[in-house]
Length: 202
Image 1: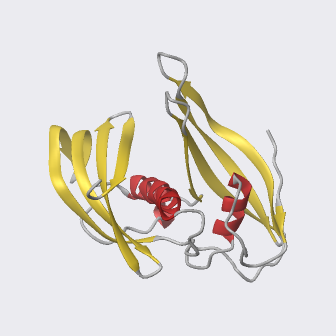
Image 2: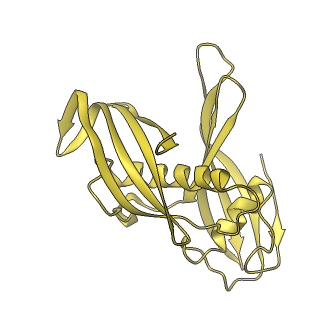
């Protein structure tokens, strides 16, 4: 599968309307680690890196792709994760692909390792863009605090990190000066971790 898209402005003047638009807007955001000075970028390639895993019902599943942005001649890879619910809704999260050793720990006392922190932040950023609505001008998000609300239950902890069980955290986002708290419920096994997140109070 291959997709392409192109933009000629450093900062989009309208809200992104497609997944390609979102990837290009992320790549142009200085606060999200992008380069706003490049005035010619496009999605040059996409590839599936984790194939579709379907549920027993066969109507829902998840998969992961790598989208490469040509940023003024420099290839910049992004990891895009898709999760289709049984009702047909599709959740998409994305983040710059970096080595685990380059991932930056978030503020607070989250029990998630750096890779899980990165994946959770990518999901929350996209979720909060949806919550803010299409007319919202703020397109950047960052985590300013994490806090464990319920410790690990029904599981095991190794090296201060859970390897099995469930726990709950509060992640607070900075939405261009406005703080927005989310409650994140993690469930982990030795095969991997899943999570769900909702705005606090909902």
